[in-house]
Length: 259
Length: 259
Image 1 (tube, rainbow over the protein chains, first blue to last red):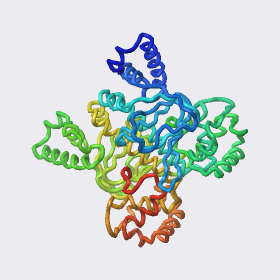
Image 2 (cartoon, one colour; image 1 turned 180 degrees about the vertical axis):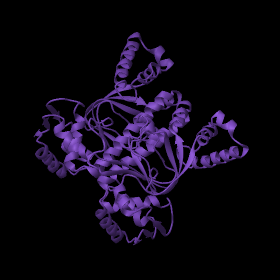
Image 3 (cartoon, each protein chain N blue to C red; image 1 turned 60 degrees about the horizontal axis):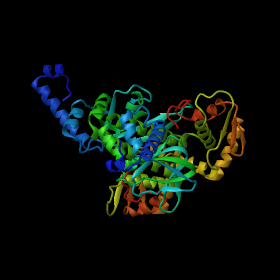
Image 4 (tube, rainbow over the protein chains, first blue to last red; image 1 turned 90 degrees about the vertical axis):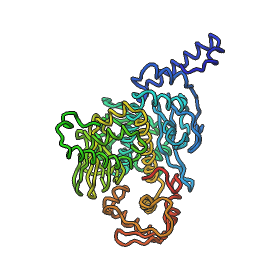
């Protein structure tokens, strides 16, 4: 347990119970992530009792690039946009993440500054974890470093594939691939999807101009027969999209490494 | 030392000396890489005495994607192309690496299979290191895991910036950025460069069709005034390119994280 001694002594019984409740709630969230799954109980306890919950509204900027970093985040729900700005003022979307994803963790290798900015794009519930705790546990606990290396390696492969798609897939295929990632892997029969955030951001996430995105979405509908109604999308089955998008990709569906 | 006991006993004095010479030669190569720099002497010895040197010719395929992986590689010199093939037979270039770069290491997180194929594009000298040794040392030696995490985090940032460039930089700016990476950081006065490998591969590395690459190179010359003569390129100074390319990027020149 990482509550400091003085604080522990000054807590009332009620406070102590609330703290324990909170820690076990946080532990439940952490174990859903790849990094903390199957982790030793004492490591999990150390992390969850030193972390806190944060509720944030759409539009809130959590931190900006190169700002000093003391915490990293786990997403319980909501959507977070990671982005950077070029010198001439344009924005590049690094990623848009949702539940069970972690961000801000690599700041520990950037002299404790964030390597990107983070903005809430749909109301979110987050776990805030001190970077200091991550450093301490990595130094002490070899399985945690291995797990973190594994997580980074998965991420690296995702980025490889993302770069590959920019070369080999056309715009409608890239949208198809994004939609497939929203489906449950191995789902059978008809599927109803909803675009998770607005189309302008989705276009930026996929490296397209908004007008390219609209044209490509129309072409995807015409070529695959999926039904689009505002932000609702209806597929007859997975194959309706996977046969169209996955031919121009080196991974086979269902994808092992894509979130 | 990781020569097995039986082998050590059966060595003549000459063989033993050659083995020690070889190990110290390899150690010299390893310490040039980010991963092994400032590493404990005993860890370095373990790696270098279990590794071997491999000379490979242009065109040689070292391994193909999903093949079983027993070794990873450090490049002493030459150029290596990492690539993947899509189901419909197109090739995506993941990266083209040169000296002091490491590849094949993440296979330890891919059930010991390579996540990409590797082909020699300019004659190369490589150090082959057993994956088993990497696993063993990471489990035993916390600073090595931290270093590897740091290396992965640098790589992740490079890929972020690569993806960013596909969105924000036009094709001539991307070629300019590639050329800047070939220059010594903080170089002063005129600079002579040579394209390190053929233009078709260079186009693929930058995610362009060969004809787009040629047009973009001509435009880069017209807009910056650099002199291009076959594969030789002459700059008056760094600013001639950096002022043109770096305005559309979130990093400031000299770049900290690009190879």
